[in-house]
Image (tube, rainbow, N blue to C red):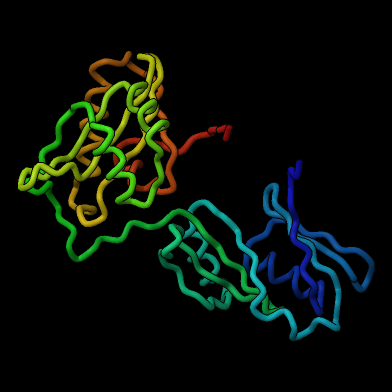
Length: 258
């Protein structure tokens, strides 16, 4: 089992490269091997990068990439920009579900810094829940559940979906009253001591119309009725800013994929 991975970059000047990673990018510690150094490295928390002197590679590493997943991406971007880092791809949400920007280091490597998507308000966004959308707590049908999963590109086979629906505690759904179509849902599981929230789905063409917020708020209101004060409510997400607006906080967590 692999338990760690550490990049080793071929560089033309180890000392200059370490200085850049320390003074411009913000890495916290450094080390060198030999003088003048033929090897070296930097560390930030538990994460390290090493540099190997290979002058023959000078000019041949341009565009090679390495990605860092980070917390508080916007603050780090501001820090790098203020320190004079060369930003080759500006910060912004990407189609693959991350917010990213790219820095070029002195050797030509492209360092991609990535975090959770940033909230971006669409021109079609609304500040209030549309009048034709009704939020209600009710059992969702298997067909409705499968269609919602398909709408957002998720997969759910009939057998596992049926079991998931049967074992859920309750559901909240969003209905477009103009055609009675279910356009969003949230599924809640729990044992009346601890709860988890799953399948927070809003059909893409209905997103940013306060439907997701309304679904979550209705679910939270119901949990406060049935659960003891202080009960744990957890969820998994790559869009933490949305849930933070509803009172959720980032915390230490673990998971196991069976």
